[in-house]
Length: 235
Length: 385
Image 1 (cartoon, rainbow over the protein chains, first blue to last red):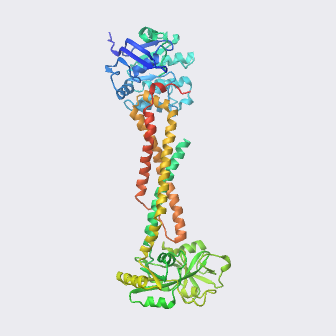
Image 2 (image 1 turned 90 degrees about the vertical axis):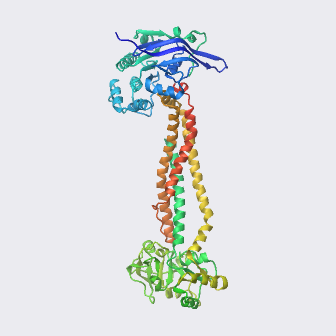
């Protein structure tokens, strides 16, 4: 029997934002959350349940007000900004709902750029990844020359470029039609599995959530999401 | 893209201006103060030494007046004078001066080991209406050996002032890169006796170029003719007189330099403004890079490098601007004075000016870099509508 290793361990995570009227709005208040290595988990949550903020806290883009986020044994939450950047570059792949590809760069350059902040650009691996997501013939295309589904695939390849331990996917199929969404989701899951990366995907799409064995409702784990008036914080 | 090109161009302009102002200034000073045409001093009518030197050595300006032939003979006979060459001016051919001279001019070394030589044809016969044309003048006037021409009265070309005399081109001179290239040499008697010239002054000379025996001769003659005498002016040493001219025009150089520095500052401001303004549009791009793991310091460095890159582009293009300005200046100076400047000659300014532009670009990049540094990642990851 294969022993599952704890990859992500979260304790008493809290994040609040100041509102324009001067009050403080707590967006994330999660007593405990964990994810094993190579495991794929879906998080469901309605709009305003703090999904994106939660992922940004895990990725180290935001610093929590309190609590602890530990990834692969490294406490991200305690690290300084540069330390969090380093962990993000080396251990986390992030797939955004809007893909966030750099429009001035070709497919392969987008993937290589992601690598350059981590272990370093590896053109062969970038080509292999883009080939794996079906874009082997479009390496030198710019994002505007690709369909939405193809752009999503570039984003998947870029997220996996640094051989991350954890891939975070924020509503990755939100901008796709049902057929492309199903294809894309399958691709994300397969490539994560092939590369031994854990996947934490957030979505409110029942069709997407139905594909996962392990689905958690953010309302159950985020005490702030249950608070009346809690909204998805803009950042 | 357009603003990048315009900014790089303004940097190129500033860099090119700086380099060319410096190089023209240095080369012009070196050349003008270095040109003595092989003579130590010039005798002329009482007046400005500078005017005398400009007229007799550089063939510019009006003659300050004449010396009599007797005065010339007295100078030539002075035991402190090794060589005395009388010259007479007063006529032109299409704006190129005719200089009446004795043939001993061609025995003088205008630079060590170099004498004025005839490239094609032969030297004029002092008793004939013959002319030896400087290389530049020959090229511009299309005068070849055997061609004839009628001189015009005065130093400035006026169509209705043509002399009746006909001169034959006996020779064209080798290029010397001195003011001698842009004049037409004729026998001094020819110029003195040109129809229409006053009979009373027919034997006068405009100046006497002298080569002295020993340095003390110059000091003694300076004392004798300039301080104690009041008949003639002795411009000696020639380089000193030209140095004084350059010192007089030093404020103009300073203004030109100030203009170049101002252009550089405006260009730096333009880098700052164009990159700073683009930061708003690039907030998302920066946020994406940060989300991919780029550190704040990396983003800061990217923006500073971008500014430096634009400045570097401009600095490289600055060499083209410098070459164009220098070539135009060299052409004009050669046309007007015969002095040849070398647009490609290396000067330290060609290193420090581009480096200064690069540094200025980097400094100009600091402000937008600081703005990029402060970009909030989470806030800017969503598309800007």
